[in-house]
Image 1 (cartoon, rainbow, N blue to C red):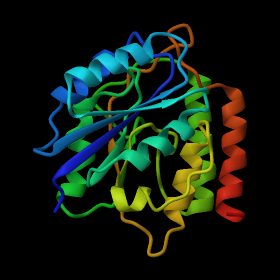
Image 2 (image 1 turned 30 degrees about the vertical axis):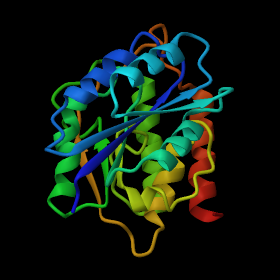
Image 3 (image 1 turned 180 degrees about the horizontal axis):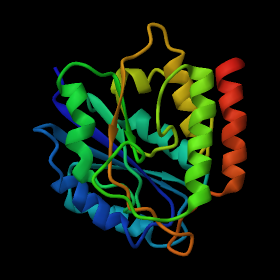
Length: 236
C-alpha cells in the first residue's frame, strides 16, 4: 500500500527560489500521501545552505544533506535517493520551472496500481508552457529520440526533471553520472531492468528559465547525454 511520498530536491545556488519551491511542495495536493522532503545542497556558494537550514528548523518533514563541493545534479540525486524513505520518490528541481501543482497527475498512475515509474512530459499537452529557446527544445527532442531508439520506449521527454519511482526501484539502481547525464542514464537503466517496470508518462506544465535567470544546462551537457545514451544502453 502506498502511503508516503519522498520529494528529492537537488540544490545549487538557489537561494532565491528554494524557500518558495519548498512551500509549494508542502502546499501541493499529494492525493492524501504523507510527505518527506529531502534537500541536498550540492556545494552552493550563495545562501542556499542557510535557507535550507532555516526551512528544516521550521518543518520536521524536511531532511537535509550537504556536499562540501559541487558535484552535479546526478550526485545530489544519488545522495537524496539514499536518504529517501517514502513509498514513491519524486525528483523536484529547486528552481520554479516545474510546478508541484502537477503532483496529482504524476501520482495517479501509482495510486491506481498501474505504474512503477512515471515521467512528466513538457511536450505532452500540459496546461501551460513558457515560450523560450527553439534550439533547446529541438535538442531535447533529438536526445529523446536517440534514447528511445536504444531503449525501445516511446517517451516524448526523456530529459524532464519530473521523474517518479517506486522507492525499491530507484534505490536498486547504481547511479554513476554526476551531472545532467543522470537523465539518459536512469532512463536506460530503468528500460533494461527485467522484468521491465511499468512506465507511464503524463503531460505537465513548464515555466522554464532563461540563462540570465539561472538556467545551468548547456550544449556540453547535450554532448554528454548522447555519450550516456550509448554507454548505458550498450556497455553497462
